[in-house]
Length: 160
Image (cartoon, rainbow, N blue to C red):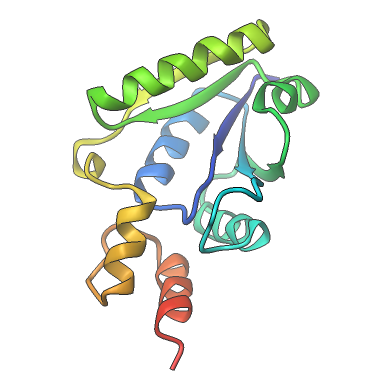
Protein backbone atom coordinates (compact mmCIF):
# COMPACT_ATOMS: atom_id res chain seq x y z
CA UNK A 1 0.00 0.00 0.00
CA UNK A 2 1.49 3.33 -1.11
CA UNK A 3 0.84 6.17 1.33
CA UNK A 4 1.52 9.85 0.76
CA UNK A 5 1.63 12.46 3.52
CA UNK A 6 0.21 15.96 3.02
CA UNK A 7 1.73 18.06 5.82
CA UNK A 8 0.74 21.60 6.61
CA UNK A 9 -0.72 24.04 9.09
CA UNK A 10 -4.09 24.12 7.28
CA UNK A 11 -5.27 27.20 9.19
CA UNK A 12 -7.73 26.82 7.54
CA UNK A 13 -7.85 24.31 4.71
CA UNK A 14 -8.88 25.99 1.44
CA UNK A 15 -9.71 24.98 -2.14
CA UNK A 16 -6.04 25.01 -3.18
CA UNK A 17 -5.23 22.41 -0.52
CA UNK A 18 -8.24 20.32 -1.52
CA UNK A 19 -7.25 20.44 -5.20
CA UNK A 20 -3.77 19.12 -4.37
CA UNK A 21 -5.27 16.41 -2.13
CA UNK A 22 -7.79 15.31 -4.78
CA UNK A 23 -5.10 14.95 -7.43
CA UNK A 24 -2.50 13.31 -5.15
CA UNK A 25 -5.07 10.87 -3.72
CA UNK A 26 -5.59 9.45 -7.22
CA UNK A 27 -1.88 8.58 -7.45
CA UNK A 28 -1.60 6.80 -4.09
CA UNK A 29 -3.56 4.21 -2.14
CA UNK A 30 -3.85 6.51 0.87
CA UNK A 31 -3.32 10.22 1.53
CA UNK A 32 -2.76 11.34 5.12
CA UNK A 33 -3.23 14.99 6.04
CA UNK A 34 -0.79 15.84 8.83
CA UNK A 35 -1.72 18.98 10.72
CA UNK A 36 1.24 20.74 12.31
CA UNK A 37 0.59 21.06 16.02
CA UNK A 38 3.07 23.83 16.80
CA UNK A 39 2.40 25.80 19.98
CA UNK A 40 4.73 28.57 18.75
CA UNK A 41 2.57 29.26 15.70
CA UNK A 42 -0.28 31.63 16.41
CA UNK A 43 -3.12 29.84 14.62
CA UNK A 44 -6.72 31.00 14.39
CA UNK A 45 -8.06 27.46 14.75
CA UNK A 46 -6.99 24.89 17.32
CA UNK A 47 -5.41 21.67 16.11
CA UNK A 48 -8.66 19.77 16.71
CA UNK A 49 -10.68 22.41 14.84
CA UNK A 50 -8.29 22.19 11.87
CA UNK A 51 -8.58 18.40 11.84
CA UNK A 52 -12.38 18.68 11.93
CA UNK A 53 -12.37 21.23 9.08
CA UNK A 54 -10.21 18.89 6.96
CA UNK A 55 -12.37 15.84 7.70
CA UNK A 56 -15.54 17.68 6.69
CA UNK A 57 -14.01 19.38 3.65
CA UNK A 58 -12.57 16.13 2.24
CA UNK A 59 -15.43 13.66 2.86
CA UNK A 60 -15.67 13.19 -0.92
CA UNK A 61 -12.11 11.80 -1.10
CA UNK A 62 -12.40 8.17 -0.02
CA UNK A 63 -8.77 7.33 0.71
CA UNK A 64 -7.77 10.06 3.17
CA UNK A 65 -7.01 10.13 6.88
CA UNK A 66 -6.16 13.10 9.08
CA UNK A 67 -3.80 13.31 12.05
CA UNK A 68 -1.72 15.91 13.81
CA UNK A 69 1.87 15.87 14.98
CA UNK A 70 4.08 18.09 17.06
CA UNK A 71 7.11 16.16 15.83
CA UNK A 72 9.04 15.90 12.59
CA UNK A 73 7.06 15.05 9.46
CA UNK A 74 9.89 12.72 8.42
CA UNK A 75 9.36 10.70 11.61
CA UNK A 76 5.58 10.69 11.14
CA UNK A 77 6.09 9.41 7.59
CA UNK A 78 8.33 6.62 8.87
CA UNK A 79 5.76 5.59 11.51
CA UNK A 80 3.01 5.43 8.88
CA UNK A 81 5.20 3.72 6.26
CA UNK A 82 4.64 6.58 3.81
CA UNK A 83 6.62 6.58 0.57
CA UNK A 84 6.16 10.27 -0.23
CA UNK A 85 5.21 13.75 0.92
CA UNK A 86 3.13 16.06 -1.27
CA UNK A 87 3.44 19.84 -1.25
CA UNK A 88 1.74 22.40 -3.44
CA UNK A 89 3.65 25.01 -5.45
CA UNK A 90 1.92 28.29 -6.25
CA UNK A 91 4.78 30.48 -7.41
CA UNK A 92 8.45 30.19 -8.21
CA UNK A 93 9.03 31.87 -4.84
CA UNK A 94 7.57 28.77 -3.10
CA UNK A 95 10.14 26.56 -4.76
CA UNK A 96 13.18 27.64 -2.74
CA UNK A 97 11.48 26.98 0.61
CA UNK A 98 9.97 23.68 -0.57
CA UNK A 99 13.31 22.58 -2.03
CA UNK A 100 15.02 23.21 1.32
CA UNK A 101 12.29 21.30 3.17
CA UNK A 102 12.44 18.40 0.69
CA UNK A 103 16.22 18.18 1.04
CA UNK A 104 16.04 18.20 4.85
CA UNK A 105 13.22 15.63 4.93
CA UNK A 106 15.24 13.36 2.64
CA UNK A 107 18.21 13.74 4.98
CA UNK A 108 15.99 12.78 7.95
CA UNK A 109 14.22 9.92 6.14
CA UNK A 110 15.66 8.79 2.81
CA UNK A 111 12.77 6.32 2.36
CA UNK A 112 10.41 9.21 1.63
CA UNK A 113 10.38 11.28 -1.56
CA UNK A 114 8.90 14.77 -1.72
CA UNK A 115 6.60 15.51 -4.64
CA UNK A 116 5.89 19.13 -5.55
CA UNK A 117 2.58 19.57 -7.36
CA UNK A 118 1.78 22.75 -9.22
CA UNK A 119 -1.42 24.36 -7.99
CA UNK A 120 -4.24 24.89 -10.47
CA UNK A 121 -4.10 28.34 -12.01
CA UNK A 122 -7.31 29.54 -10.34
CA UNK A 123 -5.80 28.86 -6.88
CA UNK A 124 -2.32 30.34 -7.45
CA UNK A 125 -3.12 33.48 -5.44
CA UNK A 126 -4.65 31.56 -2.54
CA UNK A 127 -3.18 31.06 0.92
CA UNK A 128 -4.69 30.62 4.38
CA UNK A 129 -3.51 34.01 5.66
CA UNK A 130 -5.22 35.80 2.79
CA UNK A 131 -8.41 33.79 3.29
CA UNK A 132 -8.50 34.73 6.98
CA UNK A 133 -7.81 38.40 6.26
CA UNK A 134 -10.58 38.66 3.67
CA UNK A 135 -13.02 36.79 5.95
CA UNK A 136 -12.14 39.05 8.87
CA UNK A 137 -13.03 42.10 6.77
CA UNK A 138 -16.30 40.51 5.58
CA UNK A 139 -15.08 39.93 2.02
CA UNK A 140 -16.46 37.13 -0.16
CA UNK A 141 -14.34 33.99 0.19
CA UNK A 142 -17.04 31.54 -0.89
CA UNK A 143 -15.09 30.50 -3.99
CA UNK A 144 -11.90 29.93 -1.97
CA UNK A 145 -13.10 27.63 0.84
CA UNK A 146 -15.65 24.85 1.33
CA UNK A 147 -18.93 25.76 3.06
CA UNK A 148 -17.90 24.24 6.41
CA UNK A 149 -14.76 26.42 6.50
CA UNK A 150 -16.72 29.53 5.50
CA UNK A 151 -19.14 28.92 8.37
CA UNK A 152 -16.34 28.43 10.92
CA UNK A 153 -14.51 31.55 9.75
CA UNK A 154 -17.72 33.57 10.09
CA UNK A 155 -18.19 32.16 13.61
CA UNK A 156 -14.64 33.14 14.58
CA UNK A 157 -14.78 36.67 13.19
CA UNK A 158 -18.45 37.68 13.25
CA UNK A 159 -19.98 35.74 16.12
CA UNK A 160 -22.53 38.40 17.06
